[in-house]
Amino acid sequence: MKFVYFDCSSGASGDMILASLLSLGVPLEDFRQAINNLKLRVDIKVSKASSRGFSGLRVEVVVPKNSAGRTFSEVESTIKKSRLEAEVKENALKIFKRLFEAESRVHGRSFRTTHLHEAAADDALVDIVGACWLLRRLQVAEVYFSPVNLGSGYVETSHGLLPVPPPAVAELMAGFPVYSSQEPTELLTPTGAAILTSLGRCLSPWPELVYEKIGYGLGHRDLKYHPNLLRAFYGKLQDFQPARKIQVIEATIDDASPQLLGNFLNRALELGALEAYLTPVVMKKNRLGSKLTILAEIDKIDRLTEAIFRETTTIGLRYYPVERRVLRREIKEISLKGQEIRVKVSYFGGEAINFQPEFDDCLRAAEKLKLPLKQVITEAIRKFKA
Image 1 (tube, rainbow, N blue to C red):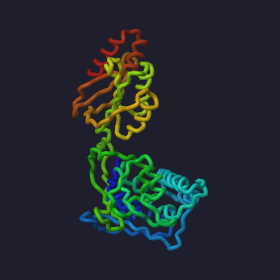
Image 2 (tube, rainbow, N blue to C red; image 1 turned 90 degrees about the vertical axis):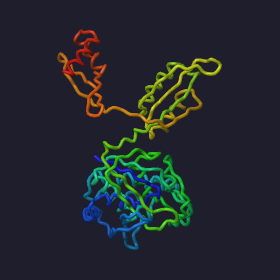
Image 3 (cartoon, rainbow, N blue to C red; image 1 turned 60 degrees about the vertical axis):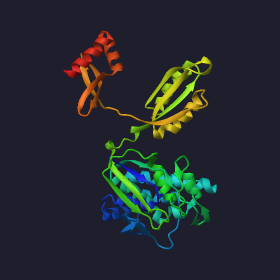
Image 4 (tube, rainbow, N blue to C red; image 1 turned 120 degrees about the horizontal axis):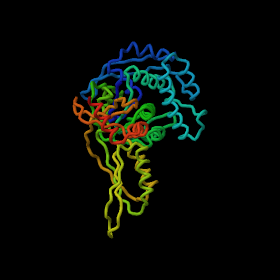
């Protein structure tokens, strides 16, 4: 399986996402045939172009002048009637649902009566369904993206002149890192925002990448300060380890019971912490306290921070980036006197250097075999190495 990481330093739009994925090597004719399943009157034009020294693909979806917007029910019907793969339909409807929900909140209408103009016209259907089809064709299992450049100034819409980011984009990007490079134009469109936030995770800062190639998707305007392009870094999922750079969260607490803190360690692990532990410390006025330490991937920080404030008595915490190295691990099974025991094996390079039988399996085997636990653990290691 594969991953794709979108560099959104020039924002993102539906056609730029299409172009960046197409430039990774998908035949254009295959893409056109897939889109024909939607039975839309559109013409998809793909051309080679350049922007400030970067060459890539530019996609233009030409629609009839009377191409109208749709309600969600109409979009749903169009997608479900197509003969596209179930995964493509499911992801496309997920994106459109998020887009319609954002628009309904902005305009104060019910979800079912919300009628989108630009974001549900034929070209938006091609952008969203096409992106889902391309991701499946490229065998992409995980989508990531950088903090997104919004641009600045104003944008012309069917509702008139609106400030950047327009309301729908602002709704869609809630909870995701955004910024502005003061480029005097809209860089992130509602369609681009919906695709990224529905299917992807934002990683900040730039993650450690091992990629095979880069797709370049160009926008249609010449920007004032930088190239107008979206880069798609593409590679093997097993080679991409966004958790390699992790964060340490710490809080010193002197007014919580041991039971409360002990219970929170389990809660932190449930929320995705890689490690969670307590260290006894001496605080001001010689009060005994505990230092809570949590190691977590970058995208887990917000939920863990909220949980710490809600479920412990601390009123402040700190977090900072660290780097770590971990051994590659796998689980193997052995049979010891009729009892199945899993053994965790750790590798340094290609060499197996650590062997650890699962404690719960050894405990169950010891009880059934009427043997001391330490004997079962020793015999499990000996048999595994034999």
